[in-house]
Length: 480
Image 1 (cartoon, helix red, strand yellow):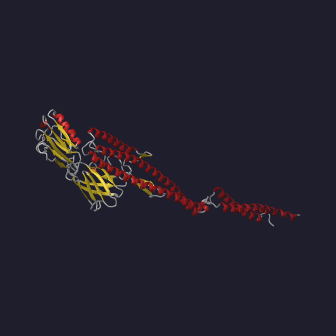
Image 2 (tube, helix red, strand yellow):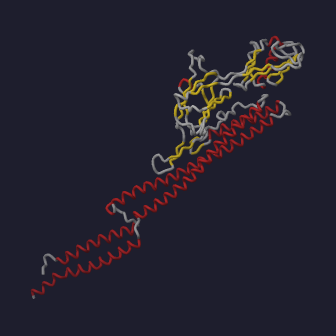
Image 3 (cartoon, one colour):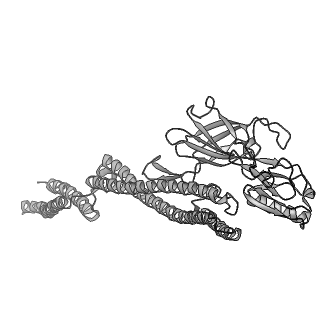
């Protein structure tokens, strides 16, 4: 029997300390609900759980991002719905103006409303925003850059989603031209004469009572309605179409009581009832695509509408732009140099809105929203007061309505995709949280069993230690 070293107490105390540590760990797990409270609890499990937490939080934010994207799409769709309604109204006015029962004043009234609606289309394009981010001004569309030398010679560039990034080169072989007719006479030659001139179908009457300025004013205003411009009053009278291309024309025919007051070159229905109008036409621009040294596919084709160029190919490839007047190979620039007519267009993905719809880098969705102002829709110059204005307006507005419909279709596809994206992200997040729970969440029933076991062991150990501490007192019996 030893009293300096109570081995029984040492052994009991050692076991009691282990039981106390286990009991403390069990209480920590029960109070926190986690079986991973320290890295030492499960080093590999701790590393796995931290990665999973990053994914779960990323998925949660990605779901919110996708929902914000849906909100943007809904704002765009609502704005474009109003644009569509205005385009439909403008087309209705064009149909109204085309009716022969309308006077010029009534056509001008229709044009006033069309002009106001065009201003509103531009306002919606400029001011539609989400959290101060502009949506319809083209800032969220793919950026296309012309080479520095030609930035002033090309405008209204549009590329479809199928146009890949790269450099596209072409040569402008011929510029679009207006139709021009020179009568060869001066305004002074018409003073004191009677007659009338039909300019593209609009008739201008001249009497012998009109002054030089009055004659010129009548011809000038008639030319405007007839979609032409007239030369200066001090120059020989000539008329030039305001449009470009093969559809642009100048048609002149006269009726005069005093003979050919406008010159022998213009048919006179008074002296020759079968006379046909003198008609001159313009030319479309012409370009050559460089499919050997640029990104153009050899199968790409070009269509022309005056100075508007449209390039199409398979898989929805579509590129269009507007050439400035007079630009072609061999033309003399303002600086006095001769241009080669070569234009290089750099198509980039700059400007497209990237939605982060995943928890990791690169998991994005691109959203393109083209500009919807009157310039990009080619309705900036529609005028129903001219002779052919209503029919041209109907054609332009049909195209604009089709363009907006295509944009809205793409927007609708984006929205549907984002709805599915949100559902997928939420489902993935739920499954990830379930997996994380199996790694770090404590089984309360199992841990409560452990807690009860260690609690009983602690009580038993305390009791045994008390008894072990009593053993040295038994040595006193040997001294009696």
